[in-house]
Image (cartoon, rainbow, N blue to C red; front, side, top):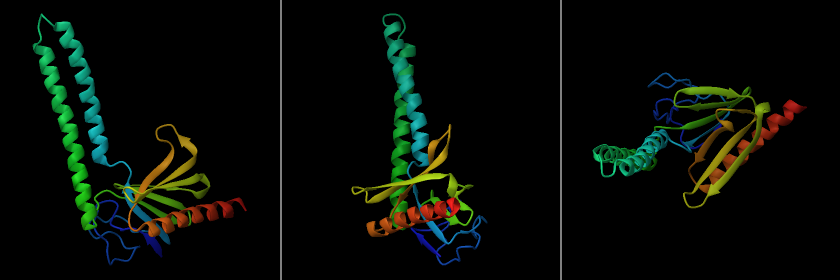
Length: 207
Protein backbone atom coordinates (compact mmCIF):
# COMPACT_ATOMS: atom_id res chain seq x y z
CA UNK A 1 0.00 0.00 0.00
CA UNK A 2 1.33 3.40 -0.95
CA UNK A 3 0.42 6.94 -0.06
CA UNK A 4 1.53 10.53 0.23
CA UNK A 5 1.63 12.88 3.20
CA UNK A 6 0.73 12.40 6.83
CA UNK A 7 -2.22 10.08 7.32
CA UNK A 8 -3.89 11.19 10.56
CA UNK A 9 -7.54 10.36 11.08
CA UNK A 10 -9.52 12.65 8.74
CA UNK A 11 -12.39 12.75 11.26
CA UNK A 12 -10.69 13.70 14.54
CA UNK A 13 -7.07 14.42 13.57
CA UNK A 14 -5.62 11.58 15.68
CA UNK A 15 -2.12 10.68 14.54
CA UNK A 16 -2.33 7.15 13.14
CA UNK A 17 1.44 6.78 12.91
CA UNK A 18 2.36 3.10 13.32
CA UNK A 19 -1.19 1.77 12.91
CA UNK A 20 -2.22 -0.54 10.05
CA UNK A 21 -4.09 1.46 7.43
CA UNK A 22 -7.22 -0.67 7.50
CA UNK A 23 -7.53 -0.40 11.29
CA UNK A 24 -10.25 1.87 12.65
CA UNK A 25 -9.20 5.01 14.51
CA UNK A 26 -8.67 4.12 18.20
CA UNK A 27 -9.72 7.66 19.20
CA UNK A 28 -13.06 8.12 17.42
CA UNK A 29 -13.72 4.78 15.70
CA UNK A 30 -13.64 6.20 12.16
CA UNK A 31 -12.90 3.55 9.49
CA UNK A 32 -9.35 3.15 8.26
CA UNK A 33 -8.11 3.49 4.69
CA UNK A 34 -9.46 0.86 2.31
CA UNK A 35 -7.57 1.51 -0.92
CA UNK A 36 -4.08 0.53 -2.01
CA UNK A 37 -3.19 4.19 -2.65
CA UNK A 38 -4.05 7.05 -0.30
CA UNK A 39 -3.31 10.76 -0.59
CA UNK A 40 -3.67 13.14 2.33
CA UNK A 41 -3.26 16.92 2.47
CA UNK A 42 -4.77 20.12 3.76
CA UNK A 43 -7.95 21.57 2.25
CA UNK A 44 -7.53 24.66 0.09
CA UNK A 45 -10.14 26.54 2.13
CA UNK A 46 -10.24 25.88 5.86
CA UNK A 47 -13.23 26.18 8.15
CA UNK A 48 -11.67 29.23 9.78
CA UNK A 49 -11.52 30.98 6.40
CA UNK A 50 -15.18 30.20 5.67
CA UNK A 51 -16.30 31.50 9.06
CA UNK A 52 -14.19 34.63 8.69
CA UNK A 53 -15.62 35.20 5.22
CA UNK A 54 -19.18 35.09 6.54
CA UNK A 55 -18.41 37.51 9.36
CA UNK A 56 -16.55 39.82 6.98
CA UNK A 57 -19.56 39.90 4.61
CA UNK A 58 -21.84 41.01 7.47
CA UNK A 59 -19.25 43.58 8.54
CA UNK A 60 -19.05 45.04 5.02
CA UNK A 61 -22.85 45.28 4.87
CA UNK A 62 -23.00 47.08 8.19
CA UNK A 63 -20.19 49.46 7.22
CA UNK A 64 -21.91 50.47 3.98
CA UNK A 65 -25.23 50.74 5.81
CA UNK A 66 -23.67 52.94 8.47
CA UNK A 67 -22.25 55.29 5.84
CA UNK A 68 -25.70 55.63 4.25
CA UNK A 69 -27.50 56.10 7.56
CA UNK A 70 -24.93 58.58 8.84
CA UNK A 71 -25.40 60.71 5.75
CA UNK A 72 -29.20 60.42 6.00
CA UNK A 73 -29.26 61.24 9.72
CA UNK A 74 -26.63 63.96 9.39
CA UNK A 75 -27.77 66.98 11.31
CA UNK A 76 -30.70 65.08 12.84
CA UNK A 77 -29.76 61.97 14.77
CA UNK A 78 -26.35 60.47 14.24
CA UNK A 79 -26.50 58.11 17.24
CA UNK A 80 -27.79 55.14 15.24
CA UNK A 81 -25.23 55.67 12.53
CA UNK A 82 -22.44 55.75 15.08
CA UNK A 83 -23.62 52.52 16.70
CA UNK A 84 -23.86 50.76 13.35
CA UNK A 85 -20.36 51.97 12.47
CA UNK A 86 -19.03 50.60 15.75
CA UNK A 87 -20.78 47.26 15.12
CA UNK A 88 -19.33 47.07 11.59
CA UNK A 89 -15.78 47.80 12.77
CA UNK A 90 -16.17 45.26 15.60
CA UNK A 91 -17.33 42.52 13.25
CA UNK A 92 -14.56 43.32 10.81
CA UNK A 93 -12.01 43.04 13.65
CA UNK A 94 -13.61 39.74 14.70
CA UNK A 95 -13.28 38.37 11.17
CA UNK A 96 -9.63 39.41 11.08
CA UNK A 97 -9.02 37.77 14.47
CA UNK A 98 -10.65 34.51 13.32
CA UNK A 99 -8.49 34.51 10.19
CA UNK A 100 -5.25 35.25 12.06
CA UNK A 101 -5.95 32.67 14.77
CA UNK A 102 -6.76 30.04 12.17
CA UNK A 103 -3.60 30.87 10.24
CA UNK A 104 -1.50 30.69 13.41
CA UNK A 105 -3.02 27.35 14.33
CA UNK A 106 -2.36 25.90 10.88
CA UNK A 107 1.26 27.10 10.99
CA UNK A 108 1.69 25.51 14.41
CA UNK A 109 0.08 22.26 13.27
CA UNK A 110 2.25 22.18 10.15
CA UNK A 111 5.38 22.63 12.29
CA UNK A 112 4.42 19.73 14.55
CA UNK A 113 3.20 17.49 11.73
CA UNK A 114 -0.38 17.60 12.98
CA UNK A 115 -3.35 19.03 11.13
CA UNK A 116 -6.85 19.13 12.59
CA UNK A 117 -8.40 19.49 9.16
CA UNK A 118 -7.46 17.09 6.39
CA UNK A 119 -8.62 16.00 2.96
CA UNK A 120 -8.11 12.32 2.16
CA UNK A 121 -8.48 10.63 -1.20
CA UNK A 122 -8.58 6.85 -0.82
CA UNK A 123 -8.27 5.00 -4.13
CA UNK A 124 -10.39 1.85 -3.93
CA UNK A 125 -11.58 -0.56 -6.66
CA UNK A 126 -15.03 1.11 -6.61
CA UNK A 127 -13.73 4.67 -6.94
CA UNK A 128 -12.13 7.43 -4.91
CA UNK A 129 -13.36 7.81 -1.35
CA UNK A 130 -13.36 11.53 -0.52
CA UNK A 131 -13.12 12.10 3.23
CA UNK A 132 -13.06 15.32 5.23
CA UNK A 133 -14.33 16.41 8.64
CA UNK A 134 -16.30 13.26 9.30
CA UNK A 135 -18.02 13.21 5.90
CA UNK A 136 -17.37 10.59 3.25
CA UNK A 137 -18.53 9.91 -0.29
CA UNK A 138 -17.37 7.66 -3.11
CA UNK A 139 -16.89 9.06 -6.60
CA UNK A 140 -16.69 6.48 -9.38
CA UNK A 141 -13.76 6.82 -11.74
CA UNK A 142 -16.12 7.09 -14.72
CA UNK A 143 -17.58 10.27 -13.16
CA UNK A 144 -14.19 12.04 -13.02
CA UNK A 145 -13.56 14.30 -15.98
CA UNK A 146 -9.99 15.37 -15.23
CA UNK A 147 -7.38 15.92 -12.56
CA UNK A 148 -5.78 19.37 -12.52
CA UNK A 149 -2.70 20.40 -10.55
CA UNK A 150 -0.40 23.41 -10.18
CA UNK A 151 2.70 23.94 -8.04
CA UNK A 152 3.00 27.14 -6.03
CA UNK A 153 6.75 27.65 -5.68
CA UNK A 154 6.21 30.36 -3.04
CA UNK A 155 4.33 28.15 -0.58
CA UNK A 156 6.03 25.01 -1.98
CA UNK A 157 2.71 23.22 -2.14
CA UNK A 158 0.81 21.62 -4.98
CA UNK A 159 -2.87 22.35 -5.50
CA UNK A 160 -4.76 19.37 -6.87
CA UNK A 161 -8.38 19.38 -8.05
CA UNK A 162 -10.71 16.70 -9.36
CA UNK A 163 -13.48 17.66 -11.77
CA UNK A 164 -16.69 15.73 -12.22
CA UNK A 165 -18.40 14.90 -15.49
CA UNK A 166 -21.76 15.79 -13.93
CA UNK A 167 -21.52 19.22 -12.33
CA UNK A 168 -23.55 19.77 -9.18
CA UNK A 169 -25.23 23.20 -8.99
CA UNK A 170 -24.20 23.74 -5.37
CA UNK A 171 -20.46 23.18 -5.84
CA UNK A 172 -19.94 23.41 -9.59
CA UNK A 173 -17.71 20.84 -11.25
CA UNK A 174 -14.87 20.74 -8.71
CA UNK A 175 -15.21 17.66 -6.52
CA UNK A 176 -12.55 18.54 -4.02
CA UNK A 177 -9.34 20.52 -3.66
CA UNK A 178 -6.24 19.45 -1.78
CA UNK A 179 -2.93 21.12 -0.96
CA UNK A 180 -0.09 18.61 -0.93
CA UNK A 181 2.90 19.14 1.35
CA UNK A 182 6.34 17.57 1.66
CA UNK A 183 9.20 17.68 -0.81
CA UNK A 184 8.31 18.93 -4.29
CA UNK A 185 9.64 15.69 -5.78
CA UNK A 186 7.22 13.71 -3.60
CA UNK A 187 4.36 16.03 -4.55
CA UNK A 188 5.09 15.52 -8.25
CA UNK A 189 5.16 11.74 -7.78
CA UNK A 190 1.84 11.84 -5.93
CA UNK A 191 0.17 13.93 -8.66
CA UNK A 192 1.56 11.67 -11.37
CA UNK A 193 0.23 8.61 -9.55
CA UNK A 194 -3.21 10.21 -9.08
CA UNK A 195 -3.45 11.04 -12.79
CA UNK A 196 -2.15 7.61 -13.80
CA UNK A 197 -4.69 5.77 -11.68
CA UNK A 198 -7.59 7.89 -12.90
CA UNK A 199 -6.58 7.48 -16.54
CA UNK A 200 -6.00 3.75 -16.05
CA UNK A 201 -9.36 3.21 -14.37
CA UNK A 202 -11.21 5.23 -17.02
CA UNK A 203 -9.46 3.22 -19.72
CA UNK A 204 -10.46 -0.08 -18.13
CA UNK A 205 -14.06 1.14 -17.75
CA UNK A 206 -14.19 2.24 -21.39
CA UNK A 207 -12.77 -1.09 -22.57
